[in-house]
Image 1 (cartoon, protein in one colour):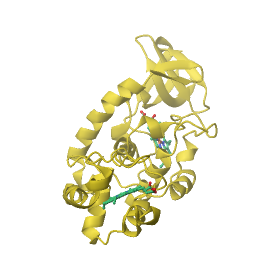
Image 2 (image 1 turned 120 degrees about the horizontal axis):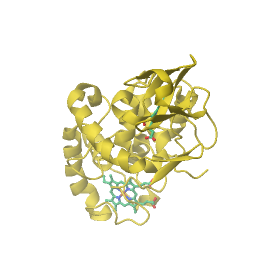
Image 3 (image 1 turned 30 degrees about the vertical axis):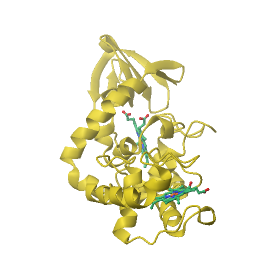
Length: 266
Ligand code: HEC
Ligand code: HEC
């Protein structure tokens, strides 16, 4: 599979899928503390498994797919989106009592939500999902995401277009982009700074490279192909010049909720 950017096709998805798993594993070891604020604990997930087996499996089934139109393991609901929505569904019930209201203790309630977010996998990773509306506001405002990313035809091209990111990536891999952009960045997409023989300085994002040439998208959003023997300086940096690291865990959960709504359908 390949992605089209300014007329040039370059392979991405398959590489990304492979890389994403790798980066996440490393990053969890190195940053357990930081990720801790951003994920449900495995104790919560285990507690949720017990509640689910006792209270929910009877109707929803062990795989979470027995009520029509709902797949709890895949996060497919009729109207609920955020974790707060799930709280209301569970504590208030639905459809005139076809789903009864549950009076659970707080640890049981957050546990069963964690278990659902972990995909009904007791060993899974459970990412809190916040409010998509607040996430959109953060995307365009405080998070400054819209200053680099394009969505549904609006915004610059200096960073990947996110119009379909919600169907391309899991919540866990999206979260990594938000809390550790340096770990999530693909080496090929790193920022570059180039000085040519005619003393032009070009900064941008590398798209492709072979022995003799390098292709990049420059800070004016122009696609450039340069011959390496014409370059005086060619520097590749480790990380995006500016990353979205200044968001709180609750804000990250909101932005993830928004990104998950981006399914490529305008
Ligand atoms: C007696 C059967 C029954 C039990 C027990 C039950 N549910 Fe449900 N649940 C339903 C039905 C039926 C619906 C669909 C309601 C509707 O039509 O909107 C539903 C819907 C849901 C939804 C989706 C809401 C949405 O917006 O689409 C979630 C999430 C959910 N249940 C979670 C749970 C959890 C967690 C438990 C255990 C604590 C549980 N349910 C126990 C029958 C049940
Ligand atoms: C200074 C520019 C910049 C800002 C600000 C920025 N990003 Fe990015 N972002 C990038 C670049 C460059 C990449 C490409 C990294 C890669 O895939 O190698 C990227 C990658 C991503 C990806 C992965 C895209 C893909 O196709 O896999 C996501 C998701 C993302 N950013 C979300 C965000 C969100 C959400 C924000 C705001 C909270 C944000 N970014 C802010 C530059 C930026």
